[in-house]
Length: 263
Image 1 (spheres, rainbow, N blue to C red):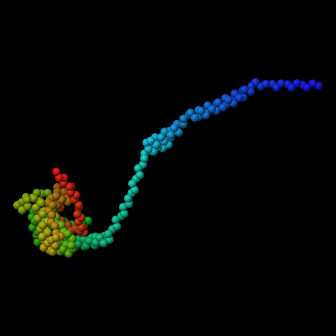
Image 2: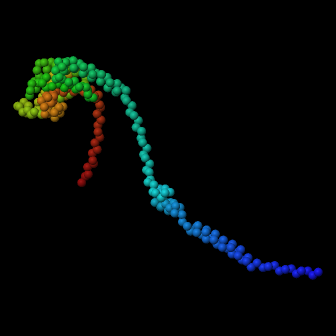
Image 3: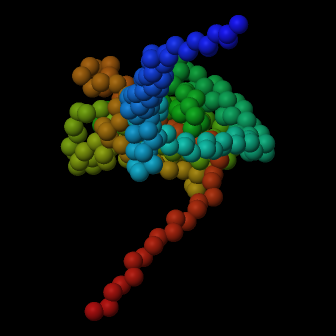
């Protein structure tokens, strides 16, 4: 029996389509990659731009493209230690305050009749004790001569003051009504002579002269308005200031003298 002749294989003429499809797929992928590389991310571009700006300008930049204001470091706060009170000095001040209170009580007792009449006021201030005496309780109008009873009352006050070592300042005050006499050309002279008259009483009663000071202020330091009779009467007074402040050692202030230029 004769062998059948092998039938010829049918030739596939469409194989090229497989290679073409693979080529098209690779080409498509290539363009996708190229497109991805060519597209610019705006956010990343801003970050890159800000980073370059920061590098050249040395200005901090945040990722939201807003400039960050550089914060200057705050100087360290210096803690000032609280001053420790000087125990001996505080004790001395406390003792002085107690002595001043006792002195104020003694002065009010010595001037009790005038205090009851409203012609004397004893005030306790940060400086010490101030005794305000109306001029009508001491002097006649426009005069600087003490009456007998007024002199006795001031001597009683001087005896209280003499027992301590506080400095005493006597101040004369007037109202704004002008005065012009042969003895007192103005209120300055009247207030000064009245203060000096009280000072002489204190000195004669035993108060050391180095503790006494007399000042005439005239009408320059009123305590009430001068537009009423009561106000003017309140301003005409003699104030006795008993200073309780502890004396301080003076410190010399250095003075720099500019060098002279020789010509």
